[in-house]
Length: 324
Image: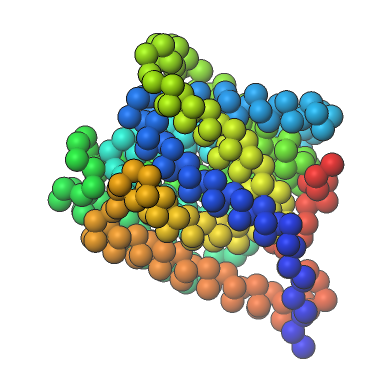
């Protein structure tokens, strides 16, 4: 007899929805602010704004330093996701449009599933490997479309695609590093101190940020602050809240909708729409993600048949990670 499905955590679903909308807006804001700021300076400014906001929230909620067991995951996610990811994405979006960047970065959920299966013991079914191959084929199609004169009119579009792939890899590594940290610390603590680690990692760009702040228009600075407060401080906290209540692979799958939101937002606000070949490659990326997700669903069903009375290991709530 199949095990009953656990009830849907509506607060986790709402938190994930907030995250997706704010992260989609981030691709558009980065594309806009990136016209004035260099990649490293924009990353540092965003992380500074995010760190200040998050650490103030920690003070208000009287949340101290995370326990020792949370720090390895916080350090990994801070360096990879907050640090390298932001610089790579900012640079990539100077070479390709926001919609194309979102399509390529959305290879990340497949990588999260792969790393989660290997490092978090969530399983490595054959269909997962097929999904990875399909997604990377889609990224190659997007790269080919850009080399033929895609939406980015200047710079090196192929470099932009490669940078967005690097962003996807570091995003995946950051999520997988973050998941164990949520067993020991609250979502706010994990996010706040991960953001602080990323800020420290980006301090070599402090000189560039100071020079550029003196000459960029106010709108660009406000865009940077928006990125720090909302897509970083708010969205990363709501992401961690939801991640604490499900698996890394399942949370990665929720980002399916981000590219569609980004294409709509960048069309409405920036007048940018990826070319047909880029969109076709993006659909191929998402198809690979869908294939990989189907394989993980089958894995969970097999586990349930073997042990119907036990909850799935990737569904257990991180007890100490609940908001306080």
